[in-house]
Amino acid sequence: MENLNQADLTDAFVELIRRAATQLPADMENALKKAKDREDSGSAAEGAFETILNNVEMAREHSTPICQDTGTPIFEIYYPLGVSTRRLAGYIRAAAAIATERNYLRPNAVDSLTGENSGDNTGEDFPTMHFHEWDEPAIHVDLLLKGGGCENVSTQYKLPNANLGAGRDLEGVRRVALDAVQQAQGRGCAPAVLGIAIGGDRGASYVKSKEQLFRPLEDENEVPELAELEDRLYEEANELGIGPMGFGGKTTVLGVKVGTLHRLPASYFVSVAYMCWANRRAHMDVTLQDGKTEVQYA
Ligand code: SF4
Image 1 (cartoon, rainbow, N blue to C red):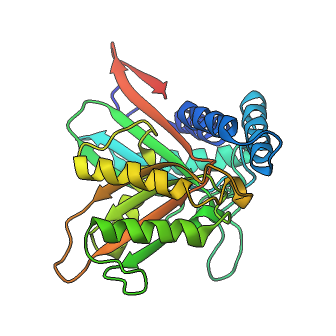
Image 2 (image 1 turned 90 degrees about the vertical axis):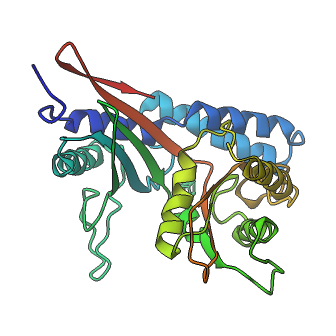
């Protein structure tokens, strides 16, 4: 009779990483296909989408990375009372090393002082892990591989912002979010998914903005005014004409997701997590069935 604390989940995490690195989620692939169909026949934008979609197909077929930058692995782990987070972290680090050896991940963890690459995607706080205890009798893991190019154009604003005429309200959020997309141009490998957080301190705000990227594209915000903002930003960002990889075109973003945090009266931060078209996310559930550990992926 196993329990969730005894099962060695290293192999399960290797498989989760393989799936995230090599299989673009279906909602993203469908959105890219629809975006390609919207572009003018023979345009640079249509060509860019074709290249992206071929790449996605080949990666899935050959189990090779969708993009050469396999990104920062960000794990959100939900676990029940009694499960050791220290052990889970150990499995994740071991899995990152194995996944690197198998070329699912490029060696991507570099010492910030010496520039030395650890060679196996482990290092100081690398991979990124956030643990959340919950009431379910199961472990759930969300994994995001966050590319470096799109991370470089992610940004944070402190409102009010006089230059952009952005006050401390949703209209202000709208203005800075559009500015973020305009500033990024094609450098973050558009079309993007925007994860936006309103509030918090600077650190919490960035974390919250990335959490939004786990939401499927079709997920509708439960808060009506945020749902409205998401739809409006989606429309308006796509009117900017930046297009895939900055080639110009009708699709600059594939989705916009907004979340909020409480904040100090003195501060009003808006963080924009810019995620490239290679929005690689994968999910895993670990449950106990008849005394045995079962692992399922989505
Ligand atoms: S931003 Fe995304 S698509 Fe562009 S190189 Fe990085 S991981 Fe690849």
